[in-house]
Length: 135
Image (tube, rainbow, N blue to C red; front, side):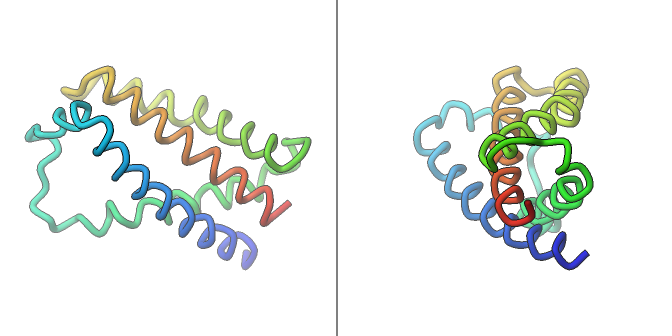
């Protein structure tokens, strides 16, 4: 359990830095994509902002447990194992969530595609880090 927590927290720190650096760059280079977020669906009064900032750690801890449980199914060098892990997560978890989000919420296909890409990148980076930390 200690290995799961430590590797999950390290992965969370890495994802936190990459996620917010990537968000800054994405807003800077693709501002039209973020104009869609001026929608009442995304307005927050600030009471739950901390939950948003903690998502990298919650995500990493969950993936760390998943990795520890199923790592024997992934073979090859750690980069390949991490990539395969990210793809498996994207197909099994992200695709259905993005499908229901697009069908139930007033969001654009570009927005949902960007969420899918973001989740795929996060899961792949997490997979690579976890494969290195907890082979």
